Image 1 (cartoon, rainbow, N blue to C red):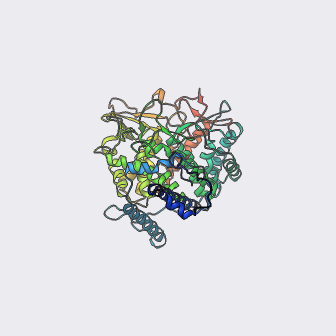
Image 2 (cartoon, helix red, strand yellow):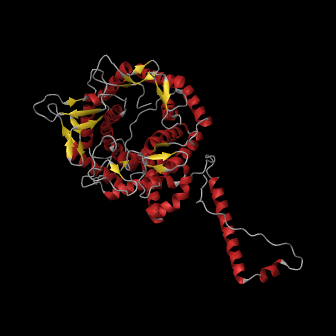
Image 3 (cartoon, rainbow, N blue to C red):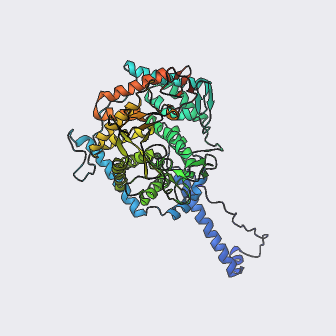
Length: 554
């Protein structure tokens, strides 16, 4: 990977006079004034140093045999300035962290062969000792009717996309047209790992061919930094790890270099948008702040990119965001506001506190970063535990009359609202995941309670869950869940089904598997159209009157 240097004026050059046979080179040199000889000496030394560095960088670029040379990224010329401004970890601290990470990885590998089935997940101090991973065989193709039905649904969606939206971002299945979000064939990239896992080899091969021959990120348009990271970069990295095919790594390195420009703000907090061609970050027209989820849900992807490309800049830029948020503290309960300013690095005063839209995945990534880094960065775990405790004491309540657990919001940071987004269902899966890595078992109990609540949100005439639900806290009313007309649409979001997947895998309780199947059946019945799947306008209305010609999961 080439490094692009700061734009500078060309160095001055000198044109020698005509040859003269009466002077030797040494005599000509001695005849020059001392000041001029000094200038020549410094110039020559500078040229030698420049050539030495250039050759060294060229040699370094060839050490990674799997990476082809990708286009230079303008963001890299800012790296030195950014490092000076944001005070990166000192070399000794970094060396220690790398050593800890390596030791943790070696210990985990050794534990796989040495530890017994009943080995503890944590010591008395709550520190992880060994993780018992679920013993689940890899999927090798559908073997029962339910698996075949899911694969068939994917084939149906893929055919509609291929017929009417190929190479474009998303399919509009009702109008048989397409929409552009990034201009990068988003559905193809976002579907690669699913195609691979499902064993849809023919479809995967044609998608790979398009990526290899036609995918081009050199688009002069601004995209969502967060969405592009989790969908484009995340999709390419996951497919690289699944398939081992270097083409996906090359494309990941390309788009990662472009997206990294969003993190070059005065504070180190990422801008909301980034231009794929110029790599310049910016805020959208509607406001000057980034959301918490946008800036704190990219660290897994950029850390992985740093490790596979051996370019630590990606990890340093992304992790600096986490460090800034950690240092700010997010209040006494560990709960952060929704908006943070990329210029100042400060949270907006009195902003809403929620586990829903614009904040949700910050908490998820605290836990997953701790796991990803070999459980060596203690403050990630401590911030996560503090936030979960804050969630319990400040946001977790139980509806009337059936006592369904729900996680509400603090409007303006103080006024409680019994509103829960469908997005909050992620929390059930995250809490369950934490218990499999040695965290308190009470988290599993809350996970089960929230998993049940999310299932109750699907108790609608269509069997689909709404975008937002409100929970009853009035003893004079007997309906636990209220779905308002403007919140009744379903965008086919995955959070509830993913949470039930975690709960099924970690508890073995087949009720969670049944809940997922029931939701899938409802999707087939009410969201399936001739050329794909659409969002649903109102989950409480049967027969359906309106469908929306796109879906969030495209």
